[in-house]
Image (tube, rainbow, N blue to C red; front, side):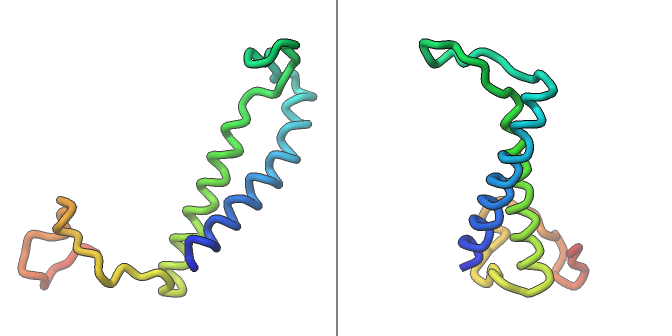
Length: 96
């Protein structure tokens, strides 16, 4: 369920940002030729920033759900199996 919420938030952020950013970039003149078509029409560059914003929003929502609502806990997660060093003592002085 947490993955569905993260996906929906990421999709909405990308969709809204694309509708806002593309006209702004076009009016600023940040365009280039479409090298994949015969017509070589002008398309907006720097669209990847919107994808990064959607990814960032999804990560923030996932972290917030895990931190503040204890939703999507990793009960069966073993940090020692992946080489992640959590602490080298007996468990009394954990870092997190």
